[in-house]
Amino acid sequence: MTDTTSSTSPTVDVLCVGAGFSGLYVAYQAAERGWTFAGFEKAPDVGGTWYWNTYPGARCDVESIYYSYSFSDELQREWTWSERFAPQEEILSYINHVADRFGLRRHFEFNTEVVAANWLPDEQLWEVTLDSGDTRRGRYLLAGSGGLSTPKDVDVPGLENFTGLTVSTSRWNISLDDLAGKRVAVIGTGSSGVQCIPLIAEVAEHLTVFQRTANYVFPARNAPLREETVAEVKRQYPDIREECRYSAGGIPERPVTDRAFDVSAQERQRRYEAAYERSGFLGVGAEFTDLLTDREANETAADFFRGKIHEIVQDEKTATLLEPRFPMGAKRSCFGTDYYETFNRPNVSLVSVRDEPITTMSADSIVTERGSYEVDAIVLAIGFDAFTGPLFGLNVTTPGIGRLQEAWSEGPRTFLGLMTAGFPNFFMIAGPQSPALASNVVMTIEQAVDWITDLIAHARAEGRQLIEATPQAQDDWVDITEWTVNQTLYAATDSWYRGSNVAGKPSTFMGYIGGVGKYRRICNEIAERGYPGVEID
Ligand code: N01
Image 1 (cartoon, rainbow, N blue to C red):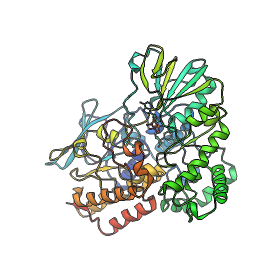
Image 2 (image 1 turned 60 degrees about the vertical axis):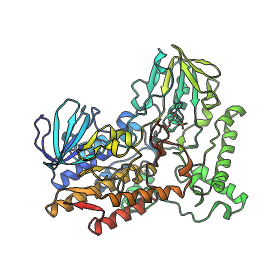
Image 3 (image 1 turned 90 degrees about the vertical axis):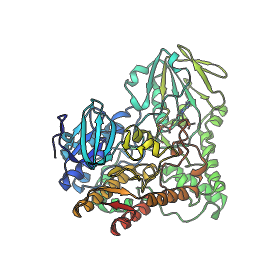
Image 4 (image 1 turned 180 degrees about the vertical axis):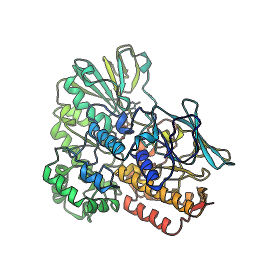
């Protein structure tokens, strides 16, 4: 590999943005294939999402034994996860271990943000501009910038008036002790809010949760992994990985063949109870085949779940406010530990921002249409400008088309979520319209990097270097992703999946939800047929 530390670095084969799961695997593949590589990471170290999201309770809700790289059997045998759902610190240690074990860290410039990327048609090169003003050139540009890495702009009115402590879950820079004995507000009840709320409640004098949309928060049922389980998994890892690769979501599936109304109400209840005990992504929402396609079927599961909230939460009014009213699974489900139980604590209260919107803030209060809540600290758990936010931040530009944000003014258009017409030699690792949003993303990342690097290797083996998706192949892929989502309840539900959490963002679904196995077969077939839909020059 090439040393990229001087401002007059030589041209490399591969430029890559990000040193999270994606960028590190690109660096690994580049080394394996003998390509020169230069990576850029705005954080001081590796980790991506797991570097930044250090809020209390942060952990992954895909089981640790699946949420890890599969490319090296030695790696998966030597690393031992301690819990069913790994905490942020452990995932970050794992990523650091991978970076060290494969010698990947030295190929990245840290504390270095890519602020622009320009295609130079005459040279057939990408030139990236760094925040230092320096530039680097390379033949291929890979964006490993993540899907949930650009925090959403703060759209809570009056925050600038507040003089207390403000912290965001996605840029957590305080300790939990800093909230001890304080009156704290958490705004947002997605996965991040749901994970930190019970822990903040334990230390705060009072916690007020500002909820806009009540979500489904399934019990995570986290637990230490038993030694026997770990040993068994390690023995069977290659088979487990293969099963995951051809599954729906990148984790082993439960074979379910019947629909909700194929069984009696009693049997449905029994099955939902068992699924609730199991929890995880294969819990209640996956118990029948039609729960994501038939609103009435979905309502049976949603109803069961709302009953569970009322069993746990003692105050009837609070329990009712916590009831989700959109179809189960149609926006990202949450997995929590003692989430609903937290609302039984005397020092916790719930405000529905739906019923009483926040109108402004004063130096020490959050003001709603109905009242004023005095607080010392505000925790923002309001989410991300998903998928397009991180890509637009790179200001990727070709002379013919302009910036990516202009090409995608009505929503992202990609071929397989990996390439976009008009931007030669530019690749997105698990970008919009890939299966990333509804999958074990580490597996999706590995598959994307394998496919992209195979394609580059194919072009190079033929003595060609220009690679670009055709507009037709892209239109066809966009049609497939839209058709697929339109068969489901995702289509009519507002969420970051559809861009509806960010004001002014075009409403398009951000993923392919036909399943990672089906997607992998499509990608494999395209490669086997010599890459139809891709122009290689
Ligand atoms: O963000 P979110 P997140 N006023 O967008 C509310 C992954 N993740 O960081 O739903 C008041 O889900 C907003 O309300 P509404 C995972 O894929 C995984 O929690 O828009 N409220 C919502 O309640 C996840 O889906 C893990 O009506 C406002 C919340 O803020 C994704 O990251 C852990 C508001 C935002 O929820 C994002 O999760 C964490 C406003 N102005 C994250 N603006 C695990 O693996 C927004 N909200 C466990």
